[in-house]
Image (cartoon, rainbow over all chains, first blue to last red; front, side):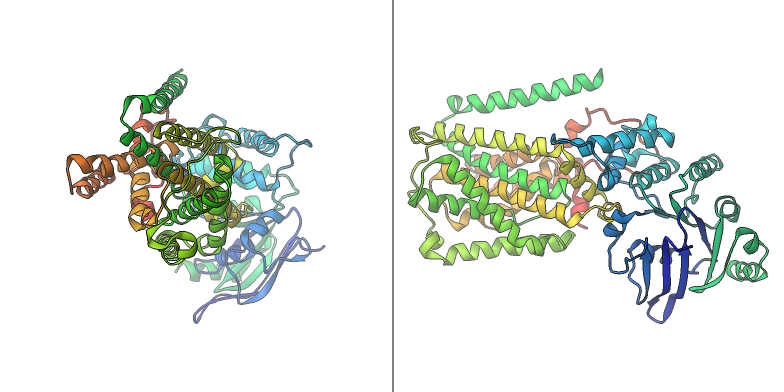
Length: 247
Length: 338
């Protein structure tokens, strides 16, 4: 089975510190792939490399069979790599609907015709459906800067989905959420269409095991282990890495 | 219901102001009418500054450059080729847009104070070129005796300050209306998003530099058109009309009025010109002091500008949550300092 996303020999150095040191990763179409590891293992750096926000010194990133290593974040997003950031990144002065409309515009399909505003109307229609799906319909006209943390997180998920992603990068999506909000997040992620592959970075292992069907473990910028959630759960190497990392 | 009342009240205030501007030349003397025409030209440049600074988040001290390009293009055209107002207006807007397009690579990739410095340098360079290119610009003496314009082919040339003022008013109202319509389209939405979080916008797949380039060129065209109005109002121009003090006053006016608001930019520019030119007679030599006090008072009392006073009467969604960061309604002075 070919990889939808493959990272090969990715190396990122900050001076003498190797944040990533020859990391390989393969995410299949529709797969829920988790990336775990102790703090400083290089998880977010790897997401940055995949999203195009960080340029590696060495290695290549391929997406849907094409080398995207030289593309910036915008071009990768247009190809279907969308991201949810560690801290919800929304447009604070725009309403919730406008936030989703903005995210939807690059990949929205408008009705055929010549009249102006078709793309925006199609994007607005999609935004309405997504806000409904994520339980934000009542807040559609509220500026995003007025939303609570959990609501902004939901909004960012709606924005990511509005871009019709083929690969969704989730960077600690449960950080700062209440138990109720985490429950809703899990529901939303489980309800994602199987056409969307997910690469999840998360510290909460219960979430990782509930949501993913493949797990890669990073430590000190290198791949320590990779396998199914059950294999990773019982791996002594992984237990040791976490014990060292926490200590 | 409250939304409708607020919208109705805003429309009524705008209509009243417009009606006041229409009847003004029959109420005030010729000097004030001419001053109002010049104020309208500067207010239009203020709108271009607000479009860049407040809407797109690219602070600028260099809108006097396309303003000057438009004015000189109009003056040269008016003196040598055509006295038709719409032709001069189109050529002036084109000249402003071309100059802005030439400076896009310098401006669009820089941010914050660096943009301010680059745009300031561009403005100063343009003034220097105007002062030295004597064969075309008349050097520091400027261009005098520019013929009066006729609005369209076949119509008589403007022979009074009233006519010139009303022409300026029609042009400013039309262009401001066009800007307001533009801000309600997808382009306006994307520019506001770029101002809020450029990185996030890029991560959504948008070509942010392209949008900012478009805004820069559009603002240049507006400033160029304003230059044409200055020529119509004064029939004389010199590099002194486009110096650093004009740039600073424009930015000051826009900050006082409210950077993200077209109406605020108009009010701010009018306020600054009123203080500078009208108070000059009442308090000789003290106008800069009054301007300074006005600026400091605005920054401390209304950091988002005079328009914020009006904003307090707008419906603003649910009450602010203490756990959520405040959402800026507009780019504030603090943001310009970034």
